[in-house]
Length: 158
Image (tube, helix red, strand yellow):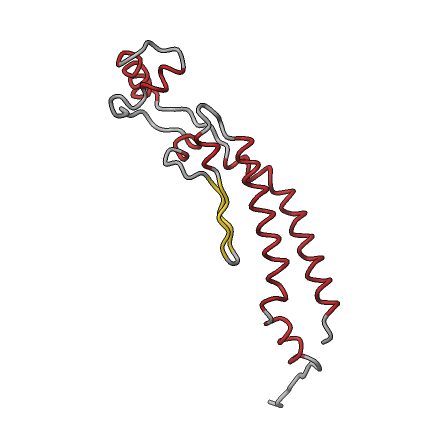
């Protein structure tokens, strides 16, 4: 079998440009940052509010080549997905019961706990709908990133 070699002129220079961390890092970082904050704002818009603690816990953490968005309170998944019937700890729901018109003290706490033991809690999705609502905006940010990379590419002498 004959030995076939294909050589692309300028391939070494092209590789050097692509390996330059600054070449893509700027547009990629801008894309991740803007996209993450879009999702954060949508989650805050859609989060149910009682005391505001869930909404205020929603934040963005940026890392190189990665962004994470979401609430930091432990009960966020229970709000998002609901729960099956269970008995919450005694006294845990007394403040909630008082804010929502149940009898004061342990009676209100008991009534809410009993309802949860019978029916569980309803889901109040906010993270998944926020992600879905963010997709068109993230697509636009992606297209902007591609334009930024193209502009940088055209500025490099290869």
